[in-house]
Amino acid sequence: MTQIASLGALGLFGSTAPRYTSYPTAPVFSLATGAEAQTRWLAALPPGDPVSVYVHIPFCERLCWFCACRTQGTQTLAPVLHYLDAVEQELALVKATLPAGVRMGRLHWGGGTPTILPPPLIHRLAQAIMAAIPPADDFEFSVEIDPMMVDEAKIMALAAEGMSRASIGIQDFSPAAQAAIGREQPFEATRDCVETLRRAGVTSLNADLVYGLPHQTLETISDTIDQVMTLAPDRIALFGYAHVPHMSKRQKLIDETALPSDTERYALFTRAAQMFCDAGLDPVGIDHFARPGDSLAEAARGGHMRRNFQGYTVDTCQTLIGIGASSISRFPQGYVQNAPATAAYIQRVTAGTLAGMKGHAFAGEDLLRARAIEMLMCDFRLDRAALADRFGAQAAVLDTIHDHVAQVYGAVVEVTPEAVRILPEGRPLTRLIARCYDGYGSHGAIFSKSA
Ligand SMILES: C[S@@+](CC[C@H](N)C(=O)[O-])C[C@H]1O[C@@H](n2cnc3c(N)ncnc32)[C@H](O)[C@@H]1O
Ligand code: SF4
Image (cartoon, helix red, strand yellow):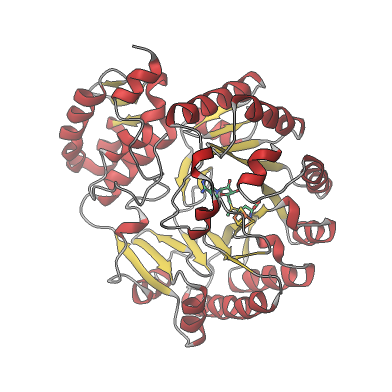
C-alpha cells in the first residue's frame, strides 16, 4: 500500500479533529464557569510568576471570504473606538482584581486585524495595558499584522511600544487563489511590509500560509513558497484550510467545486513541507517550520515547546489573561472565555463585571490528559515516565488508551513502557491519535478536517 493509502485506511481523510490549542477544547466550556471564577482565579495569581496577556481586536477593514476568525468588518473607526473604551474598562477591572506585583511577561495582539488601529490608538491601547499589568524586565510583545492594512507609521508606533515579534498573514500569492478567497495581496506590498518590520527592529517574523484553498495547485503553491522564502521569515505556520461555512457564514462565498480533494490537499501539504525543509527550515510540530536558530525550532528540538491558543509557542507562563471579546484566559485552575459577541462583551464590562461568560474548571484527569495531548502535538512523543512523575498513580488511567492506540495505529505508532511515539510517516495522523486521549470525545462537524 502507498503511504497515502495507508494513512487513508487509518482514517486521515473524512475525519475531523480539534487542533488542540487547549484541552478541554472550547466546545466543552459551560456557563457554570464564568466571571465569578475569573474574578477568584485572577485574585489568586501568585505575584511572583509573570503572566501572558492576549488582546483581541475583532475588526477588519476587509473581510476575506475564507477566514474563520472571530471578527467583523468596518469602514470607520467608530465601532473600534467604542470597543477600545470597553477594553480599557476591562483592563481597569482586571487591575483592581489582580494581586499587587503581577507582571506581564508576554503580550500578543491578535484578531481580526490589530493594525486597523491608527498610531494614536496603538499608543493608547498599549499604555492602558501596561498601566493595568506592568511589563516584566524581559517582556516580549508580538502582533498579528495584515500587510494590506498597515503602513510605516503604524509599524513604528508598535515598535515604539516594544513590538519585537510579528506575524503576517500571507495565505497564498497566486492571483487565482486570492480571487477565490476574496483577499487581494500583491507580493510587492507584502515585501514592503516585511522590510519596514525589519527596519523597525522586529527580530522574529512569522508568516501564515494556508494550503487546501480553491484553485491551489502544486505549481501555484510552489511559486508562493519560492516568493515567501525571499522574505526570509523566521517561522512559517502552514494551516490546512478549514472550510466550515456553517460556522463562518462568509465562507458561503467560496466556490466549493474549486476546492482541492483530500488527496490533493495532502499533496499540497507534502510539497510545501518538502520545500521548506529543502530551504533549510526545521519542521516544527504538525504545521510549523522555523529557522534552526529560531527559539521555536530550538524549543522543539529540546522538547520544551508548548501549545496554547496562539498555536505553538515557547511561552512557559502558567497563566494567560485574555482581554477583549471572545478571548480565552487560562489559569492554573481552568479556562474562562469572555463573551464572544462584541456587543455582549461591551455590555458586560460597562456594567462593571468581568466579561467571562463560559469556561471550564479543571477536574479529574483533565490536566493529565491535557499534558498527554500537548506532548503528542508538540513532540510526537508521549513520555510515560514524565507523566507518571508528575501525576503519580493517576497516569495509569491512560494505559488502556495506549493499548488502544497500539492496536489501531500500530503501523505508525510505537508503544513501549517508556513512551508512545508517532513515527514520521504517522505524523499526519497526530490530531486523530491525540483525540484518543480526549476524555470529552471531542469530534464531529464543529472541527476542521484532520488533514
Ligand atoms: C486572525 S488571522 C489574522 C491575520 C490578519 N488579519 C491578516 O489578514 O493578515 C490569523 C490567521 O488565521 C488563519 N486562518 C483564518 N481562517 C482560516 C481558515 N478558515 N482555515 C485555516 N486558516 C485560517 C490565516 O492564516 C490567518 O492569517
Ligand atoms: S484574514 Fe485577516 S483581514 Fe481577512 S478577515 Fe480574517 S482576520 Fe480579517
